[in-house]
Length: 260
Image (cartoon, rainbow, N blue to C red; front, top):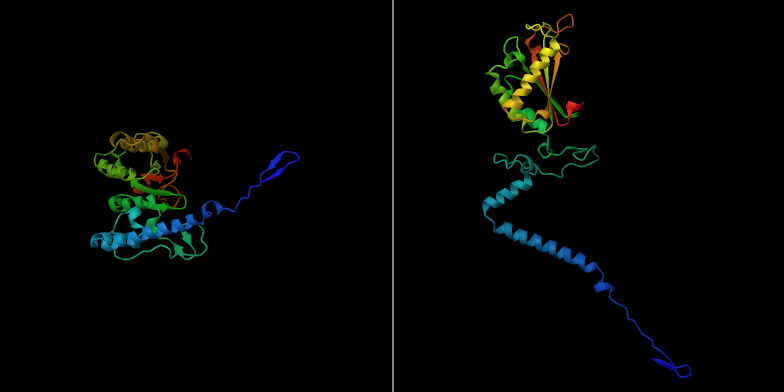
């Protein structure tokens, strides 16, 4: 401190010493985070070493089968290890690398699961079952002779069991179901217009799902195709009398195909 006697002014000089960067900077936070992570890993190892054999088996299965816990649950029958991280290289998507795809079960594919269920539970009555994974569409058909009374649009009582099983399958996936009625070249016995008749058949199937199985009507879109898109044609290029032409074709899609 110095004093100017002539002007009567007091001058104060303060010396500021260098600090420590706000508690030695932020480096300690990184070190502390590493320490906490290491301790967590340490206690996890302690827990695993003291766990019973059943717990060890479950944990081991989880890491050796990363696909099953997410999608299908623990597979007690599978002992083969399917680790991730073995795919590498430039790929065309997140799920595919230069060396191939990750385990299929890790990727949710509801239409693939639907296809497998239809094959196993309705394979004896369905035909033309095909899955187009590129556009996310599953198609299959059921003969109209198995569903409707001869020459009519009313469902057979025996068909209810088949449609009930189909309804349970549809309820496991989201999206829409296109229901198309198809005919052969013969005109309907009732004398109705083929397009109207095939549409009524498609509506009958939809009504079963809506009224008997309490399914959302907005999920279905019925259409009548008549014989315009025949499954089998004769030598003259027109729909033959093959019973498969008289069918109901189902198209299941995760998209809203009813508005396309």
